[in-house]
Length: 359
Image 1 (cartoon, rainbow, N blue to C red):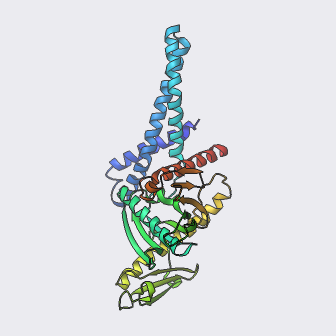
Image 2: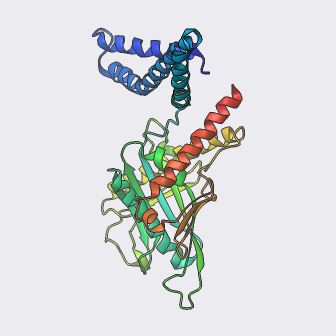
Image 3: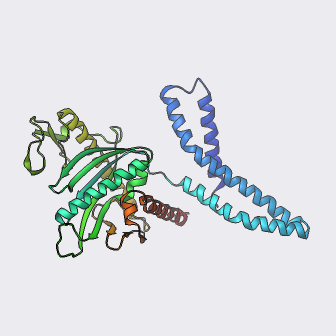
């Protein structure tokens, strides 16, 4: 059972925030915004606690009736208790989920990076298909998908593609997509009909604000050069492409899609900030992972996470041993939620088990 004093404390805090927001002398400006944010975050927790306690009270009344009532009423109370038990367990599980520590990045927007891996042109074509899969998925969720940079091959594949995805809970839904995605199929360029295995790497990074990560000007080397497209042709005739090197970590970001040097620099800084923020998060996660056994995707880009087998029409997520025989719907973004929901559920179950073990 969840400790009652923990639930009481949360309800008291919720009431205190409501009172503070209603008091003109205490609310206002930044303070009101901060109080409102905390109040909104507590709201679903408080609703969950109230629903849970309502069911506990119902169960107590039925138990009392079962103990003292006549035979007929006792049987009725026992039946009611039996049907109430699973609802009570579900309500308790819901409260436990709501009380789990939040990933501070879950509500953030994301930077999506897709790169061709082993497999030459076929890997680049698959990388382009993955990128479009996430683009369609974003559209289905009403998110804004902005292509930041594309490095195309002569056959229309992508050596590398980067996008910014803006919307509600973007990172929370996409964070388990990071890793190596394999494809098994007969390439269009293959004459003998043999199945090839190629790969593309996906990285989903929480978009970081300036307050999230401090970058010193002295730690940056900024190079300006002329943009070039596939095959070396000039994209434009001005020195507008930007390469930023973060000297302490050796992280390099290059941006050349815009004709304006200023815009290219702003986009490059956005990607650099996300990569450095993710680097810090990864270091913290590695510490926590040492104590966790049930961790699914670590976000490690070298981890094989999923295989897309076109001849058999199946997609398999190796972390949770889930196979869907609907590859077309996954690639169109329609069935991707089935994989994402299963990954989130597995992560929650692992974290609940971890909390239970600690308790």
